[in-house]
Length: 163
Ligand SMILES: Nc1ncnc2c1ncn2[C@@H]1O[C@H](COP(=O)(O)OP(=O)(O)O)[C@@H](O)[C@H]1O
Ligand SMILES: [Mg+2]
Image (cartoon, rainbow, N blue to C red; front, side, top):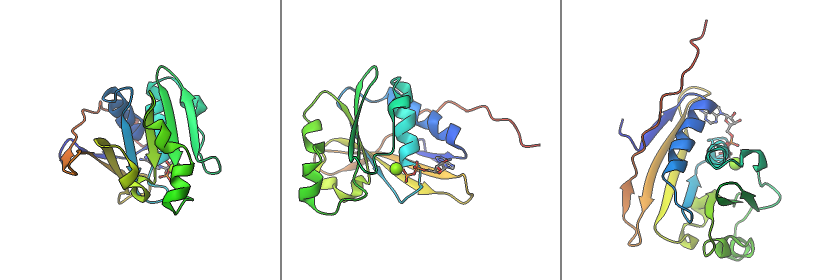
């Protein structure tokens, strides 16, 4: 398995993955989180926000579609799940956030890939074989549309062995 594919076996491991990712973001990074319901997108958002000291502010933006958090960086968190048209997505204010000094984290970004400013990071989130296994694939999407692997070094999470 290469370093841009991370197989997580627990929420804690996903948080370790998200912290490693956070270390590589700059003040205006755009992160597209793609993948079905329950694949771990919001858990990754919470882990990234933890790295910037604002995890306690994170809620699932199910009804409010765009949330803002202030930690050591400003973070804008969007969830496009309930939106279908481009007009609705633009109305959320997400597009303005791309011009501001903020890290923008977009759940269900596959619905609006054309609206995202390139380059951006794409994280494909998938269910693995067991109930608690998730697979995260991290790539950059370049201005010309080329996709390149984005390797991460994730520190091992110490887990207690099951009895
Ligand atoms: N390895 C794991 N990584 C992330 N979440 C996990 C993992 N194993 C189980 N889960 C559970 O899966 C769910 C993921 O939910 P969430 O992050 O809200 O998904 P999404 O935002 O993609 O719909 C949470 O209930 C979490 O506790
Ligand atoms: Mg979510």
